[in-house]
Length: 450
Length: 99
Image 1 (cartoon, chains in turn yellow, brown):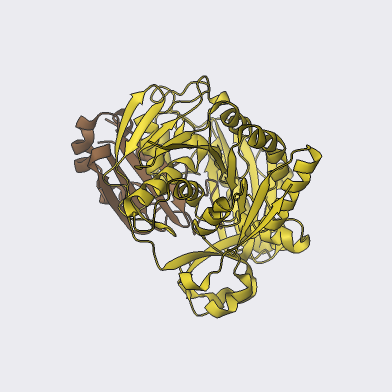
Image 2 (cartoon, rainbow over the protein chains, first blue to last red):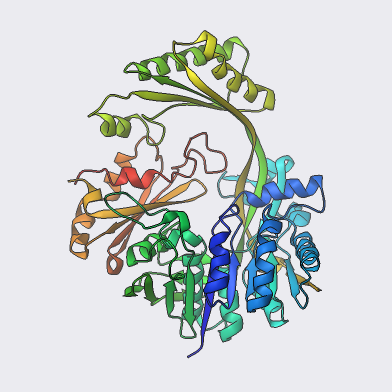
């Protein structure tokens, strides 16, 4: 029976590179994917592109491809990645220039376009933004990007046309995996369960190290060996949709039904209804079996017909956030940090700082879960050190800077023994979602060869 | 007994929605978490973080529950003022619940 081996070379934009190289060298791969686009990444990339039209792709593209291209050619491994971000065509140019520099010939590189709908955004001003419960009109002046989550069509077409490397912008993460499977196995649109299995494989791979023991260890409860050399996963998928998750022998981490179950449920809501542009996957009938050390077989993914609307991520300029931190020690640490917070609360109106939302946290006590759980967790010991963190939302950068400065000024004007001040000011590009008809989207592909 | 003695957990995020899985180490404890870890209890436990509905999905064949918590990330990952904008650490707090 035909099987295809797909490796995950990155689980987020800034991920480690050595595990990807290890996979390409020793993983006997047919494909490697690099998933590098978080919800907000493309909005930030779009701003980079506005400043410099040749930019707007993943910042580590060149660094990664310098190591990936020689192996891609030598081993015949195809690459599928969303590192194109806001500018897949520029990303392709970077890859071609690198290939020439490295004297690599005979590569066909495709850019999948059509996710950027910022030119037609005016058509959708009446649609409600899911997160804001207001029409898009309400943030019209603040919009910086609008990208639809594409499905597999563009990637499949590029592979059918012989592309060795496919670079996309925004597309659904599982599509990076489902597309090669549909290309290789010819799974038709009506083979819903097989496509469901392909979406499942993509969902399991998309965060790379998170299924091989990353984001898992809990000393004393869940031990994971050699996390400093964590291996990334390989999914060996059969044409009947069975998935074997494994990794390269000798790499760190582990693959068990526990790591696979955690990742299966990661970032999903109703497990019977995992919605992607390529189909709705149903994970409720899945079975997992540990077939060998670091090898788990996963079967039983199901699927339903794809949705007629597609999600669009809208990036918009929302506000500024000013942050300041200061540490206090000793058995009176919390009282000192609370006094410092009181000083800040009183100072902000005095200096005319207009704050739309203010958050005061005591790191070490209540910053993660609030005071009630904090008190439960800390009731058996005294807090020997506490870090005050003040974070405020403002309409201008100048106001945000005032918050940060006031925390730093606690050095000489606040409680005794405050140390280690840090501050940051940043503009917030937030994300909202709208849903538009699939028929509005036109995918096209450009090819370049060396 | 704390939940962490019999189960493990992972948190994910989408916008202003947090989801926490709860997975038993031993299938024989699935009925116990099904009975004890109700969505009402989870909402009450996270009362300072979660302001919307909590929905529980059941996956008996995997020994797992999935809690989906709405209005749980201070307005969403992209604009939250919280130090842990994704709520990645919520799983550790869920496992501290007494059952």
